[in-house]
Length: 319
Ligand code: MRU
Image 1: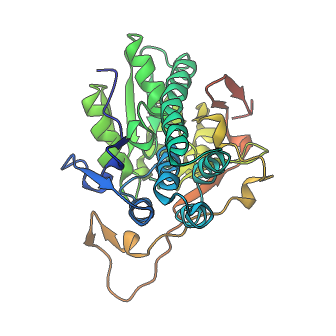
Image 2: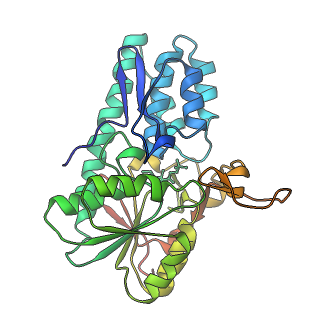
């Protein structure tokens, strides 16, 4: 199976998305009819992952027509770390014409996303050889994009070339994008994998059981520091210590040229309840404090390369 179902699609004057909060138990589609619906779906992570929230924002602009300035503002404020929302909104605001032209542009952005992911997949697949174990973190698959995926796109492309390798997926606390979403995708794709908790990664690297790490990105600074799901930096440090190559798979549009270094990337702080509970059930005592940054920044010197739709950019030889 080489194509999934579209994570997001404009159907009959509405935006259809997969409600990702229901996975892996239920594959449920929901419809967004207004800007408010789009903002709510992004904030509650019914739709999540950098590329697809950019596409959701582009459709949000169509739904908000003709109140474009106001719509742009609420969409950009919905989640702060991924560059994709601001990128897509900016592109939509350049469109000359009315609602029909805006819709055409949003659909073009969605189509391009799939095309770009396939090219990222093809470029990155060269790094995977038969017999390897590839570790990935969070969900950077079809669900995080319109279709195909970035980091998982690399894995899919290698599988489509007939390579035989294994995957290790981290569960990704606190929202379990790895356990719920990446595991769901890999199972459907029939790619052999093992699910591990985030804290097991170092153990497997130390035993020489991880050959390559590929993750996605939410925003990349001018100096190529990368913001991605919380836990990515810890993995990058472990990787360096254990001599494993560390690659980031992302479209060029994730690079934010207005931001000089990773220190300037805004980090989303989410509800403490996500940490105080596990899979929706309270797991910590009442009356305690918690912290919940949703992303972290990996400095560029920990990154071996960035796999883009054009090429693999070699970043650091030292990792
Ligand atoms: O908080 P999320 O689930 O939206 O975070 C997603 C990630 O961090 C992904 O790894 C990243 O967006 C890359 S998606 C291709």
